[in-house]
Amino acid sequence: MTDGDTLLSLYDAVLLDLDGTVYHGPRPIPGVAEAIRDARGHGAAVRFVTNNASKAPGDVVETLRSMQIDAEIAEVSTSAQAGAKLAWQQLDEGQTVLVVGAPALIAEVEALGLRAVREYSEDVAAVVQGHWPGTGWKHLAEAALAIRGGARWVACNVDVTLPTERGLLPGNGAMVAALRAATGAEPAVAGKPAAPLLRTASESAGARKPLVVGDRLDTDIAGGVAAGFDSLLVLTGVSTPADLLAAAPEERPTYVAAELSALAAPAKDLLIGPRDGWRVRVDSDALAVAGDGARDGSELLRALCEVAWESGVTTVRAEDEAARAALAGLGFTSAA
Image 1 (cartoon, rainbow, N blue to C red):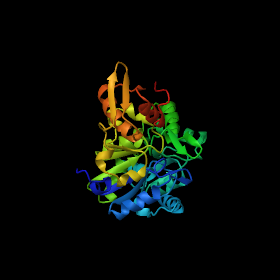
Image 2 (image 1 turned 120 degrees about the vertical axis):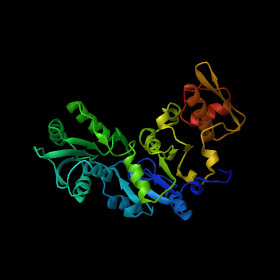
Image 3 (image 1 turned 135 degrees about the vertical axis):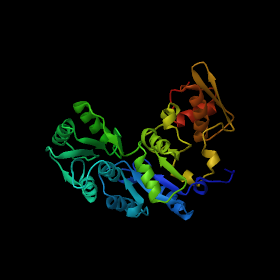
Image 4 (image 1 turned 90 degrees about the vertical axis):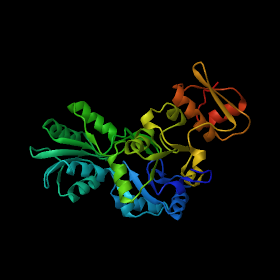
Protein backbone atom coordinates (compact mmCIF):
# COMPACT_ATOMS: atom_id res chain seq x y z
CA MET A 1 0.00 0.00 0.00
CA THR A 2 1.39 3.39 -1.03
CA ASP A 3 0.35 6.85 0.13
CA GLY A 4 -1.68 7.38 -3.05
CA ASP A 5 -3.61 4.10 -3.00
CA THR A 6 -7.33 4.54 -2.47
CA LEU A 7 -9.66 1.76 -1.37
CA LEU A 8 -10.96 1.57 -4.94
CA SER A 9 -7.44 0.95 -6.25
CA LEU A 10 -6.73 -1.77 -3.70
CA TYR A 11 -9.95 -3.84 -3.94
CA ASP A 12 -11.65 -5.31 -7.00
CA ALA A 13 -15.15 -5.49 -5.49
CA VAL A 14 -17.15 -3.68 -2.83
CA LEU A 15 -19.73 -5.76 -0.97
CA LEU A 16 -22.20 -3.16 0.26
CA ASP A 17 -24.68 -3.59 3.06
CA LEU A 18 -27.97 -1.76 2.39
CA ASP A 19 -29.89 -0.76 5.54
CA GLY A 20 -27.84 1.90 7.30
CA THR A 21 -25.10 1.92 4.65
CA VAL A 22 -26.85 2.78 1.37
CA TYR A 23 -30.22 3.95 2.66
CA HIS A 24 -32.42 4.52 5.70
CA GLY A 25 -35.82 3.06 4.88
CA PRO A 26 -37.09 4.95 1.81
CA ARG A 27 -34.37 7.61 1.95
CA PRO A 28 -30.91 7.26 0.35
CA ILE A 29 -27.99 8.33 2.49
CA PRO A 30 -26.53 11.54 1.00
CA GLY A 31 -23.59 10.98 -1.33
CA VAL A 32 -24.09 7.22 -1.70
CA ALA A 33 -25.21 7.26 -5.34
CA GLU A 34 -22.14 9.27 -6.32
CA ALA A 35 -19.83 6.98 -4.33
CA ILE A 36 -21.23 3.88 -6.07
CA ARG A 37 -20.89 5.48 -9.50
CA ASP A 38 -17.29 6.34 -8.62
CA ALA A 39 -16.62 2.73 -7.62
CA ARG A 40 -17.93 1.48 -10.96
CA GLY A 41 -15.88 4.13 -12.75
CA HIS A 42 -12.74 2.74 -11.12
CA GLY A 43 -13.57 -0.76 -12.35
CA ALA A 44 -14.66 -2.22 -9.02
CA ALA A 45 -17.51 -4.72 -9.07
CA VAL A 46 -20.43 -3.73 -6.86
CA ARG A 47 -22.57 -6.15 -4.89
CA PHE A 48 -25.50 -5.19 -2.71
CA VAL A 49 -25.49 -7.66 0.17
CA THR A 50 -28.41 -7.48 2.56
CA ASN A 51 -29.51 -9.47 5.58
CA ASN A 52 -33.08 -8.32 4.93
CA ALA A 53 -34.88 -11.39 3.56
CA SER A 54 -38.21 -9.68 2.96
CA LYS A 55 -37.47 -8.36 -0.54
CA ALA A 56 -36.72 -10.22 -3.78
CA PRO A 57 -33.62 -9.11 -5.70
CA GLY A 58 -35.84 -7.41 -8.28
CA ASP A 59 -37.55 -5.41 -5.55
CA VAL A 60 -34.15 -4.36 -4.17
CA VAL A 61 -33.12 -3.20 -7.64
CA GLU A 62 -36.33 -1.22 -8.02
CA THR A 63 -35.75 0.45 -4.66
CA LEU A 64 -32.17 1.35 -5.53
CA ARG A 65 -33.09 2.72 -8.94
CA SER A 66 -35.78 4.89 -7.38
CA MET A 67 -32.93 6.48 -5.41
CA GLN A 68 -30.91 7.08 -8.61
CA ILE A 69 -28.55 4.23 -7.76
CA ASP A 70 -27.67 1.98 -10.70
CA ALA A 71 -28.22 -1.71 -9.93
CA GLU A 72 -28.85 -5.02 -11.70
CA ILE A 73 -30.52 -8.15 -10.33
CA ALA A 74 -27.28 -10.12 -10.62
CA GLU A 75 -25.63 -7.60 -8.29
CA VAL A 76 -28.01 -8.29 -5.40
CA SER A 77 -27.32 -10.98 -2.80
CA THR A 78 -29.95 -11.45 -0.09
CA SER A 79 -30.08 -13.54 3.04
CA ALA A 80 -33.24 -15.14 1.62
CA GLN A 81 -31.12 -16.60 -1.18
CA ALA A 82 -28.45 -17.70 1.27
CA GLY A 83 -30.97 -19.19 3.70
CA ALA A 84 -32.76 -21.14 1.01
CA LYS A 85 -29.45 -22.42 -0.34
CA LEU A 86 -28.26 -23.49 3.11
CA ALA A 87 -31.46 -25.49 3.62
CA TRP A 88 -31.23 -26.97 0.12
CA GLN A 89 -27.69 -28.19 0.82
CA GLN A 90 -29.03 -30.28 3.71
CA LEU A 91 -32.13 -31.71 1.99
CA ASP A 92 -33.17 -33.85 -0.94
CA GLU A 93 -35.00 -32.41 -3.91
CA GLY A 94 -38.71 -31.95 -3.33
CA GLN A 95 -38.59 -32.10 0.45
CA THR A 96 -40.90 -29.84 2.44
CA VAL A 97 -39.74 -26.59 4.03
CA LEU A 98 -41.85 -24.56 6.45
CA VAL A 99 -41.20 -20.90 5.67
CA VAL A 100 -41.45 -18.18 8.29
CA GLY A 101 -40.93 -15.13 6.14
CA ALA A 102 -41.96 -13.08 3.16
CA PRO A 103 -43.18 -14.31 -0.24
CA ALA A 104 -39.68 -13.51 -1.51
CA LEU A 105 -38.28 -16.22 0.78
CA ILE A 106 -40.90 -18.70 -0.40
CA ALA A 107 -39.86 -17.97 -4.00
CA GLU A 108 -36.18 -18.62 -3.22
CA VAL A 109 -37.02 -21.94 -1.53
CA GLU A 110 -39.20 -23.09 -4.40
CA ALA A 111 -36.63 -21.99 -7.00
CA LEU A 112 -34.28 -24.63 -5.58
CA GLY A 113 -36.79 -27.44 -6.08
CA LEU A 114 -38.08 -27.59 -2.52
CA ARG A 115 -41.73 -27.50 -1.44
CA ALA A 116 -42.63 -24.46 0.67
CA VAL A 117 -45.48 -24.52 3.20
CA ARG A 118 -46.75 -22.30 6.01
CA GLU A 119 -48.16 -24.97 8.34
CA TYR A 120 -46.54 -27.86 10.17
CA SER A 121 -46.99 -31.46 9.11
CA GLU A 122 -44.91 -34.54 9.77
CA ASP A 123 -43.20 -34.29 6.38
CA VAL A 124 -41.64 -30.88 7.12
CA ALA A 125 -37.90 -31.44 6.90
CA ALA A 126 -36.69 -27.91 7.59
CA VAL A 127 -37.75 -24.47 8.80
CA VAL A 128 -36.33 -21.40 7.06
CA GLN A 129 -36.90 -18.12 8.87
CA GLY A 130 -36.34 -14.63 7.49
CA HIS A 131 -37.49 -11.09 8.25
CA TRP A 132 -41.09 -10.30 7.31
CA PRO A 133 -43.27 -7.58 8.86
CA GLY A 134 -46.20 -9.99 8.55
CA THR A 135 -44.73 -12.60 10.90
CA GLY A 136 -47.09 -13.32 13.78
CA TRP A 137 -47.67 -15.76 16.62
CA LYS A 138 -49.30 -18.30 14.30
CA HIS A 139 -46.21 -18.49 12.06
CA LEU A 140 -43.90 -18.89 15.06
CA ALA A 141 -46.17 -21.55 16.56
CA GLU A 142 -46.08 -23.64 13.38
CA ALA A 143 -42.30 -23.32 13.24
CA ALA A 144 -41.96 -24.30 16.91
CA LEU A 145 -43.93 -27.49 16.25
CA ALA A 146 -41.70 -28.34 13.29
CA ILE A 147 -38.46 -27.68 15.14
CA ARG A 148 -39.61 -29.69 18.15
CA GLY A 149 -40.59 -32.42 15.71
CA GLY A 150 -36.99 -32.69 14.48
CA ALA A 151 -36.93 -30.34 11.48
CA ARG A 152 -33.68 -28.58 10.64
CA TRP A 153 -33.78 -24.84 11.36
CA VAL A 154 -32.13 -22.18 9.21
CA ALA A 155 -32.21 -18.48 10.06
CA CYS A 156 -31.57 -16.14 7.16
CA ASN A 157 -30.00 -13.73 9.64
CA VAL A 158 -30.04 -12.90 13.34
CA ASP A 159 -30.07 -9.08 13.33
CA VAL A 160 -31.99 -8.17 16.48
CA THR A 161 -32.87 -4.72 15.12
CA LEU A 162 -33.63 -3.23 11.70
CA PRO A 163 -32.69 0.42 11.01
CA THR A 164 -35.50 2.46 9.43
CA GLU A 165 -36.34 6.13 8.92
CA ARG A 166 -38.38 5.86 12.15
CA GLY A 167 -35.54 4.37 14.17
CA LEU A 168 -34.54 0.84 15.16
CA LEU A 169 -37.35 -1.72 14.83
CA PRO A 170 -37.40 -5.47 15.66
CA GLY A 171 -35.39 -7.50 13.17
CA ASN A 172 -35.37 -11.18 12.30
CA GLY A 173 -33.09 -11.91 15.25
CA ALA A 174 -35.84 -10.83 17.64
CA MET A 175 -38.18 -13.40 16.10
CA VAL A 176 -35.42 -16.01 16.09
CA ALA A 177 -34.94 -15.34 19.81
CA ALA A 178 -38.61 -16.12 20.40
CA LEU A 179 -38.30 -19.50 18.68
CA ARG A 180 -35.02 -20.21 20.45
CA ALA A 181 -36.73 -19.60 23.78
CA ALA A 182 -39.72 -21.74 22.80
CA THR A 183 -37.75 -24.73 21.49
CA GLY A 184 -34.31 -24.68 23.12
CA ALA A 185 -32.87 -25.20 19.63
CA GLU A 186 -30.22 -23.19 17.81
CA PRO A 187 -30.50 -22.35 14.08
CA ALA A 188 -27.86 -22.56 11.39
CA VAL A 189 -27.31 -18.97 10.19
CA ALA A 190 -26.92 -18.07 6.52
CA GLY A 191 -26.56 -14.30 6.59
CA LYS A 192 -24.06 -11.98 8.21
CA PRO A 193 -22.19 -12.45 10.54
CA ALA A 194 -21.92 -15.99 9.16
CA ALA A 195 -19.69 -16.19 6.09
CA PRO A 196 -21.86 -17.89 3.39
CA LEU A 197 -23.71 -14.78 2.18
CA LEU A 198 -20.58 -12.65 1.74
CA ARG A 199 -18.59 -15.45 0.15
CA THR A 200 -21.39 -16.10 -2.35
CA ALA A 201 -21.52 -12.40 -3.20
CA SER A 202 -17.76 -12.27 -3.69
CA GLU A 203 -17.80 -15.34 -5.93
CA SER A 204 -20.60 -13.87 -8.05
CA ALA A 205 -18.41 -10.82 -8.66
CA GLY A 206 -15.37 -12.93 -9.54
CA ALA A 207 -13.49 -10.99 -6.87
CA ARG A 208 -10.00 -11.86 -5.74
CA LYS A 209 -9.82 -9.09 -3.12
CA PRO A 210 -13.24 -7.83 -2.01
CA LEU A 211 -13.95 -5.15 0.58
CA VAL A 212 -16.95 -5.52 2.88
CA VAL A 213 -18.67 -2.22 3.68
CA GLY A 214 -21.31 -1.84 6.38
CA ASP A 215 -22.65 0.05 9.37
CA ARG A 216 -22.92 -2.78 11.91
CA LEU A 217 -20.04 -4.32 13.81
CA ASP A 218 -22.00 -7.41 14.85
CA THR A 219 -23.12 -8.36 11.34
CA ASP A 220 -21.32 -6.58 8.49
CA ILE A 221 -17.87 -6.33 10.04
CA ALA A 222 -18.06 -9.64 11.90
CA GLY A 223 -19.19 -11.23 8.63
CA GLY A 224 -16.18 -9.79 6.84
CA VAL A 225 -13.86 -11.15 9.53
CA ALA A 226 -15.54 -14.57 9.34
CA ALA A 227 -15.16 -14.64 5.55
CA GLY A 228 -11.53 -13.51 5.72
CA PHE A 229 -12.20 -10.18 3.92
CA ASP A 230 -11.04 -6.67 4.79
CA SER A 231 -13.82 -4.34 5.89
CA LEU A 232 -14.83 -0.69 6.15
CA LEU A 233 -17.17 0.54 8.89
CA VAL A 234 -19.22 3.61 7.95
CA LEU A 235 -20.81 5.61 10.75
CA THR A 236 -24.15 6.17 9.01
CA GLY A 237 -26.18 3.46 10.71
CA VAL A 238 -26.32 1.36 13.85
CA SER A 239 -22.82 1.10 15.32
CA THR A 240 -21.45 4.16 17.10
CA PRO A 241 -17.92 5.35 17.92
CA ALA A 242 -18.42 4.10 21.48
CA ASP A 243 -19.42 0.67 20.13
CA LEU A 244 -16.28 0.66 18.01
CA LEU A 245 -13.95 1.29 20.95
CA ALA A 246 -15.50 -1.68 22.78
CA ALA A 247 -15.52 -4.00 19.74
CA ALA A 248 -14.38 -7.57 20.26
CA PRO A 249 -11.55 -8.79 18.00
CA GLU A 250 -14.00 -10.60 15.71
CA GLU A 251 -15.92 -7.33 15.13
CA ARG A 252 -13.03 -4.98 14.36
CA PRO A 253 -12.90 -3.36 10.90
CA THR A 254 -9.80 -2.72 8.84
CA TYR A 255 -10.90 0.83 8.05
CA VAL A 256 -13.27 3.40 9.57
CA ALA A 257 -14.95 6.35 7.85
CA ALA A 258 -17.82 8.71 8.41
CA GLU A 259 -19.53 7.80 5.14
CA LEU A 260 -19.31 5.83 1.89
CA SER A 261 -17.54 8.58 -0.05
CA ALA A 262 -14.39 7.44 1.76
CA LEU A 263 -14.04 4.69 -0.88
CA ALA A 264 -12.18 7.29 -2.95
CA ALA A 265 -9.97 8.42 -0.06
CA PRO A 266 -6.38 7.29 0.53
CA ALA A 267 -6.56 3.90 2.24
CA LYS A 268 -3.76 4.73 4.68
CA ASP A 269 -5.80 7.62 6.05
CA LEU A 270 -8.64 5.25 6.95
CA LEU A 271 -6.61 2.62 8.79
CA ILE A 272 -6.82 2.18 12.53
CA GLY A 273 -3.74 3.72 14.11
CA PRO A 274 -2.06 6.86 15.48
CA ARG A 275 -2.76 10.21 13.80
CA ASP A 276 -0.77 13.43 13.64
CA GLY A 277 -2.32 16.12 15.79
CA TRP A 278 -3.90 13.76 18.30
CA ARG A 279 -2.32 12.34 21.43
CA VAL A 280 -4.03 9.40 23.13
CA ARG A 281 -2.67 7.78 26.28
CA VAL A 282 -4.00 5.50 28.98
CA ASP A 283 -4.35 7.42 32.22
CA SER A 284 -5.66 5.19 35.01
CA ASP A 285 -9.11 4.06 33.84
CA ALA A 286 -9.54 6.43 30.89
CA LEU A 287 -8.11 7.31 27.50
CA ALA A 288 -6.76 10.84 27.88
CA VAL A 289 -7.02 12.80 24.63
CA ALA A 290 -5.32 16.03 23.56
CA GLY A 291 -5.00 17.82 20.23
CA ASP A 292 -3.04 20.74 18.85
CA GLY A 293 -5.84 22.46 16.98
CA ALA A 294 -8.92 21.84 14.86
CA ARG A 295 -8.72 18.21 13.83
CA ASP A 296 -11.00 15.71 12.10
CA GLY A 297 -13.01 13.67 14.59
CA SER A 298 -12.75 10.59 12.38
CA GLU A 299 -8.97 10.84 12.60
CA LEU A 300 -9.25 10.90 16.38
CA LEU A 301 -11.53 7.85 16.37
CA ARG A 302 -8.96 5.79 14.45
CA ALA A 303 -6.29 6.77 16.97
CA LEU A 304 -8.59 6.00 19.90
CA CYS A 305 -9.37 2.55 18.53
CA GLU A 306 -5.74 1.50 18.42
CA VAL A 307 -5.16 2.36 22.09
CA ALA A 308 -8.55 1.06 23.25
CA TRP A 309 -8.11 -2.29 21.50
CA GLU A 310 -4.61 -2.73 22.91
CA SER A 311 -5.47 -1.67 26.47
CA GLY A 312 -9.11 -2.64 26.89
CA VAL A 313 -9.86 0.87 28.21
CA THR A 314 -12.90 2.45 26.53
CA THR A 315 -13.74 5.48 28.71
CA VAL A 316 -12.46 8.74 27.19
CA ARG A 317 -11.42 12.03 28.77
CA ALA A 318 -10.60 15.30 27.02
CA GLU A 319 -7.52 17.20 28.16
CA ASP A 320 -8.10 20.34 26.08
CA GLU A 321 -10.79 22.18 24.11
CA ALA A 322 -9.83 20.63 20.76
CA ALA A 323 -10.27 17.14 22.19
CA ARG A 324 -13.49 18.09 23.96
CA ALA A 325 -15.04 19.38 20.74
CA ALA A 326 -13.92 16.37 18.68
CA LEU A 327 -15.15 13.85 21.27
CA ALA A 328 -18.51 15.59 21.47
CA GLY A 329 -18.77 15.38 17.69
CA LEU A 330 -18.23 11.63 17.96
CA GLY A 331 -21.00 11.29 20.51
CA PHE A 332 -18.83 11.15 23.63
CA THR A 333 -20.84 13.93 25.27
CA SER A 334 -19.91 12.91 28.81
CA ALA A 335 -16.18 13.28 28.20
CA ALA A 336 -14.68 15.39 31.00
